[in-house]
Image (cartoon, rainbow, N blue to C red; front, side, top):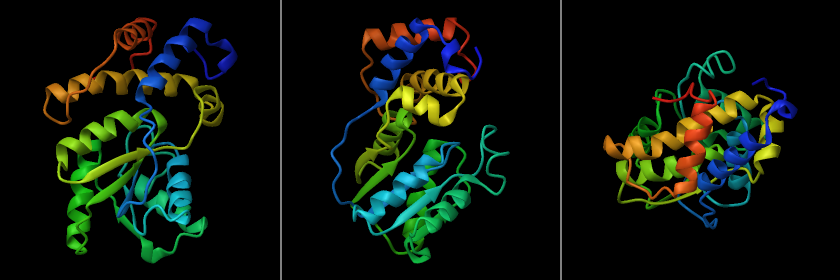
Length: 220
């Protein structure tokens, strides 16, 4: 499969849509104490975090993330650092941004962010996690496990799957990531990294079909 969306068969897009819908939590936005932008290849996370800050959804931002193989060339000095610069370009004051540059997975994103906030004397009762659209469910489950006493909601840029594919311009990456994140919902709960969540049969079936079609590069 190439990056040209027109080359993706309809059945692949249909299964990808099933997974995409599963990972959307549709939490209602409300004001929280801190916004946490999870590092990734998706610069839209920084954009959405900055937008929520300007809308008064939280007074403080933590950008968290080192690098993954998919981001080391895009953001050579780390995801969190790049996101922070982007937010500053979008008008977020430097004093409203903390940078956590070490995390290499979602559990570390949460754990290291919690530690960083404590070092700055901040002990939030509520947080908004901003992530890629298809990372919402895993981020929520991870936070509930790693930081059980905080009230957490999740948010992402409001985009359809087709719009997201067009924005990222790399269909293989997106669908492989969708498949990988779906596997991690069950796997990471089994390993104690996240809380357990129900997974409908149509999601399991869509995951299996996509993995069998070769979208398996992000499987553990």
